[in-house]
Length: 247
Length: 329
Picture 1 (cartoon, rainbow over the protein chains, first blue to last red):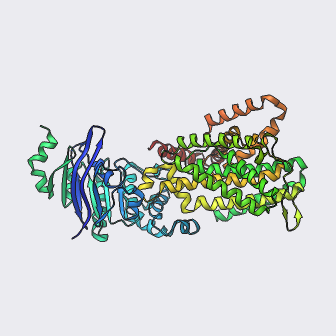
Picture 2 (spheres, rainbow over the protein chains, first blue to last red; picture 1 turned 90 degrees about the vertical axis):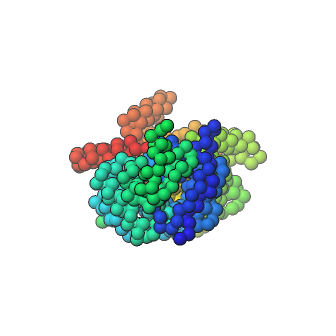
Picture 3 (tube, rainbow over the protein chains, first blue to last red; picture 1 turned 45 degrees about the vertical axis):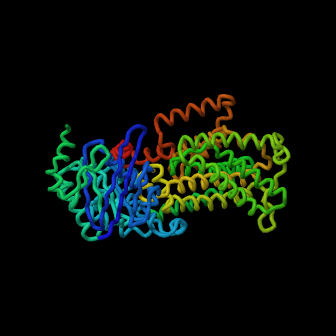
């Protein structure tokens, strides 16, 4: 299988701090890769470098073999890269349905076509399917800001899938989500992966969740990858245990 | 069903407005026309501030650009239709040009850039006498003709402005409920998330600002033939602040807010004429009271009173949802 995402020697320096210190890895089509590591190990910074939020100090990002370093987040999104953020990011005053239509509309036709075309950009049916798929049916016309935290988290993830992305980077999707909803979320993610062949990279602190979901785990500590492998291999790796427990 | 009712209400309102001048004197018709022109400019501010969540302190400057553009073109013998679109077009292009450097930072910085631009435009209008007549202004601006008939009579000109204002209002309504409008709202609510969903935040910010400014230009092109004499005063910084105030008083981000805000701004000075120099004091006090007790503006206040009368239980729920919505980052 070919690499959807290839990261080559990414570095990010903030003043005197080297938050990401030469990270390289590949993600193949259809994989679910976990990215774990202690707080402050540079996971979110690495995501932000890959996704165009930050410009990396050095290194490059390849998408399907094409160099995409320095592209803006909106450009990357239109190339089929979706994401969720560590902190909840929905549009509180729009309804659930409007949130989802917004999440897909920029992929529909041209700017001018969208101005003069249908109000829903032809996405009502897709929004309805997504709402059903994520079990938010009874909340379709509720304002997103009024939903519970777990429901908003589901919506946040659902939005990342509206445009049918090939690659989705999820930053702590399970954070603050209760157990029932967590099982739901995992099942939804596995289904999207299986049925649509979407590829994921997942940052997560919930070990049970990440070990069950991911086929391969990367461990980041102090801005470098210190271990890589299948969940059960990583779990027993002394370097990983040391990074988590300290010296 | 609901939208059918809304369209019927709009039709009744437009019809009532069209019939209004029949029972009104010359000065009242003038005030009514001024209200429409002001509302068009305020619609633009509402797009920039209320929908897209940006700032502008230059709407009166764009009004001035439109007014001088159309007046000068009219004096050069250019037909009104052409001058009208030239006024909107140059305001749109200027909006793009001054929005561009402010883009890197947005919001408050856009406010500073527009503040400086506002002063700049006013100085140009005042000092470039060869073009604008300086403080002496431009006199005897002709009202346009339609099918060979002059629109000099106040009522005819009112109907002419009403038709144009209705068309511009429809265009704005179309815009804000199109996917563009949704993207503008996304800029206001969460630009970082919007960008990650493929919304080109720079492009939409520029477009919101330029389209809003074009509405200032269009309003200016109607303002010049309405008052028939223009000088720099109405295009200074003060009136620009007043436009911002209108949008806030009417209800920022509410579609009819600018009409209500413009009515307050145009009519209140007339009603408070007895108070003479205390007028601004009273106006200021009213605005402060309203901001303290009803930050959603007069439209928000009306909505609250309406649902209070009809469904006391429902409003508590709405308020709860709103509080939750606003508590999130």
